Length: 493
Image (spheres, rainbow, N blue to C red):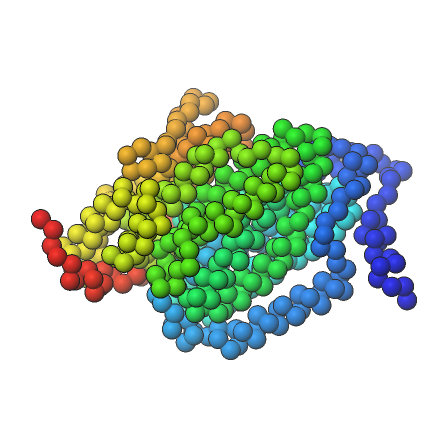
């Protein structure tokens, strides 16, 4: 039998010329992606994680065995019951947003496995599809056992099947990113920006936080997923290099668009977890510090290596590190009944930590938490209250997230008239992304437009049912206002 090195490169680069049909028919431009290039332009496609199917199956089997072993040892209901209630809600948030998005990524990888322009690319995308299917199954398996204990964990499976406003935003991102993008855009947006720039490094940071919080099951899960992400994330680099040789302007536009879209969603999912839902004694760094250490430096080096510029909105992005996730968290706390997980009221020690980590922004944010604290003192523990009226908030017509851009004194919302209708956006980048491809986004109905067209109810209580929530399930304060420091806090005049 031949040695692996004698046949591997030949089998991996098994492309051929078509004698009975034109290459455009086999790889149509509207499916394979723009710019359409002859195969010769792609034949140098290469990535560092070269593996055979036998090696792949062996490695994945060992990783699955490790996950199952940890689950058997410390993955039962009684093990999760020992964790801090705040951290459990970080787990609910991540568990819901992860698996079915990963399943959508299966479709994106399979499209690349058929319409990618080089055989090695198609082979690696096949492995990527298998990876993403595995990433779908692991959290569904682990969280299933917890549903009988806490119904909110059922959102691990049902989240993307609901009309919850967070799910609408998540689907709007995932559907375009993972289901409808052609292989070139998928490789740049998903493999390069989303995975290399965010998820790959996020999983490293979150595994460390989970370890500190005592959640060894979640730590094992994200580490097992991250080892796959590190491999198939490399698909994006050779695609982007080829794109830079033939259409650098388009390459830059894709990076600019998808970095911003990815950032907004990660700011919520990871920002909430790191700065609010991780118990103070287990916090290793702030979300901003994590972004600066793990994302900014690494991503800027990747851009430089590719000959790309930083996105045009880079200074706005840097400024938003101090504000955005704090603004959304405060808004979501007051509208917590619209989510499937519970929220934590930051106490004096947490707020002192946040003030130390965010000296520029926290003085302007502190006041709203003082007012929320006063409401709890007036109502007393165990009496859930909300500081909003009976109507929903506004949502960005691009990212579908609440209009929380900017600062408490200066919201960055922008408006645009298009096709006889007024659109509103949370920020200039969202406005410009929409303006570049209005046909791609103009017909999407956010929560407000669903209400105006009669597709969703206007009454907030009925809207909660539309979101898939009932009184036992919807989000509350994790401790029902029963904080020792709150009971002993002096009354303010």
